[in-house]
Image (tube, rainbow, N blue to C red; front, side, top):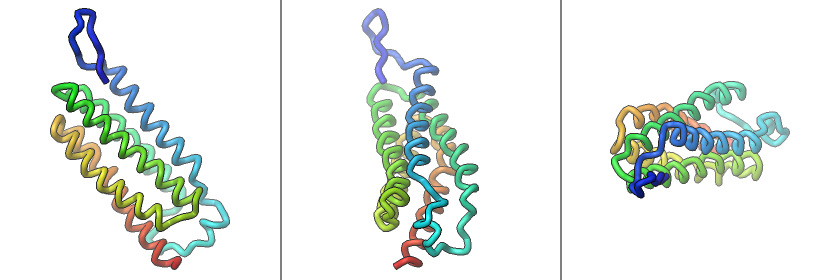
Length: 168
């Protein structure tokens, strides 16, 4: 995000733009995932699941603050990035991460492909590490805000792997 001042110099985008853009990107991801997710489907109901799987309603309760933390972290880091190159790296890594995030629901529920969703989740976990590393270069507190998201995604990978194993 580059904002050109009246004098032609580059300045950091304002907080409304930073946080607004981050929140919009996260909202698009959340909607894309939610529209693909159907825990009440006959197909999903027929899958064997581990005893430690949380009830379906828990996922919405967990994802809401996690998505908020992603938007907060990205908006804060974009404001503290020292130069356009760092901001571009944050935007790139966030875009990859959110794309992988939204793709999981489509792969698992819409395409009924738990194995492909597990592969996506592995890439998402790698992307989480990269995003946290990228943001930590600019703002350690913003990176720390992403740790619960990374932990939940790791838990989701274990759950996904268990569902794949139980349904061979």
